[in-house]
Length: 110
Image (cartoon, rainbow, N blue to C red):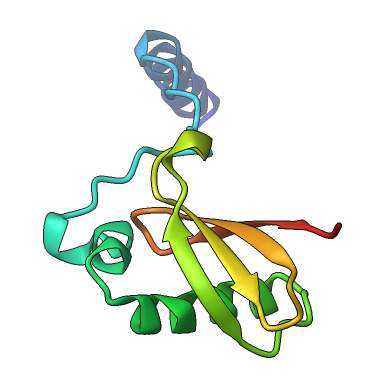
């Protein structure tokens, strides 16, 4: 019985030694977004009124008190898919829409 256990343990050790190590887990996996699911492209194709609705949602979700977006425009100097949005209060926000729909908001108060 002891020899059977020793043989099984040896086989297990040999298998473990000969197997390749697991690849490190990539926490920031690249996502391939199909064009029909690319939210950034959809936002770019919207009218300003529709886009303003997206902007207010992103700005409010980021914790800013914006009662309405009165203006939004592309701001390509800041990077791809970046928009400037102005709230009714006069505050400006930069909103970058990722292809997966994630919005990164940077607020500025003068």
